[in-house]
Length: 414
Image (tube, rainbow, N blue to C red; front, top):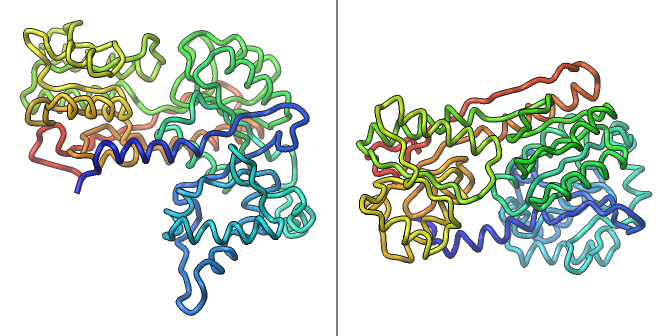
């Protein structure tokens, strides 16, 4: 059964809470608040005993995350919706367990921000962490700066990054630039000044950032994920966006579509999006299809612009959204104006974020290996910190075509 679009937007809202952790520099008592989230939130599936109250077992599990060193002092806990879903329990049960730990001083709640491991629990925590000395060193802290925390794709990358760093004995300090170049520059310098051992950057700007050169001069280990600056030599870990877009466009051409639209609803284009656009155009050229600028939608995905886009004399028979978030928005508008996918128009995306397999119809997309991205980026940063790698290195990871119902194909891979 597919998920309704209203349900999707609700899920997106809940998951966005993961990343609402800003880097506060200054005297605030929670200035170095960290969040933890993992793919699955834990290393193994939790089995609950039938003869003990469930909330007591959940309370014991939560406490174990602190005493084991998984969650450190001042660290922000994952959102309730994530913890409850991954533990397979109701939020009511989770809240009861968390309430007990708040009352006993293990956790503290800050209105409008979330739940954190309390400072007063530090002595017990440090005693239990004595066996994990690598977590006690300031050099085990790395900074991660992302362009936004309102994206399922970015949240998933963060989950895999945290997992990769945790397995290697590193903790993660998260900050967001909110898509602003000036804030990106500010946050990068703040992270560097805070003493982190290195920085992972997921940039939201296509503009040149001189701060990158500043960090290079200061010898701050830096790895860029997904987007990079062509004029600056840095470590980069990215999917092969060009090839991914090429094979998606080729798939649509094999299905018989000739008028294939492309969604570019942002005025600026980062390198990953540009590579996808170039892959789309390259496939058209190789198959003898002329590129038509009118098939590129550059406006915001709202009802009026979409209606105008589809009112062309020869409207697109298929639309390639440059990412799944845009595909979801476009699908929502299509439902609103009464068009069916794929009966009236085919729709495909890029990223294979969670939930798109349960859309109505399930979305054909290009899957990035996000687990591999997180692993490769974390390892490259650590290798740089340990001076095992010095020359700028680019790691391009393969993508996979995931065929579902939205493209109109009778063959589905999953």
